[in-house]
Length: 231
Image 1 (cartoon, rainbow, N blue to C red):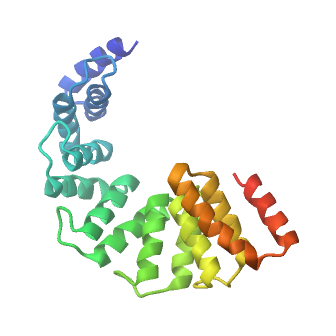
Image 2 (image 1 turned 90 degrees about the horizontal axis):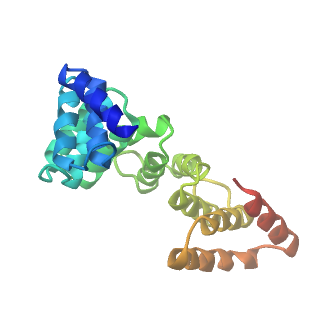
């Protein structure tokens, strides 16, 4: 019973329990057991965040980032993301990396972006792995290194990250950072296409089908089998 849960969370929250404050904030955010109220959600997240709860700091940062329940404020978002990121919160690390990369709420700083993307990537966050791969590919904030780029693209691709799958397919096509391998290129484009819809799927299929001429009928059959069985 969500309404009953909200009642007990409120009692604990009003006594200063940070986890209860965060849970009550989440219920207001989602409208579970209480009427949805984003300003109330932000209020309770803030109480928990000020007590140092990383999950609440991240959620409050997101509300400032999106302008939900509070005026949109990228600098305030970055402040709360940093507090959570420094406690090891993986999504906060990814968001802080993104803000440094784009120069939102903080001065643009590719080295700082790479630092935070790496922390999140090493915890397994696919978005951060893909972004770190791109930074190595482009030489932004880190020395350009195609092999390192391909390594991070692969880690994200193996988690089902479509952009990373496309980028890994391209690397196998042009042989940057990995040995050129048309069959592997075809496989990764096929996997990405299978996870995509509509126009994006058509675009990926178009690139993939251009790779076919580099494959023998036997290689094509094997590549199609591997791609269809990928999970």
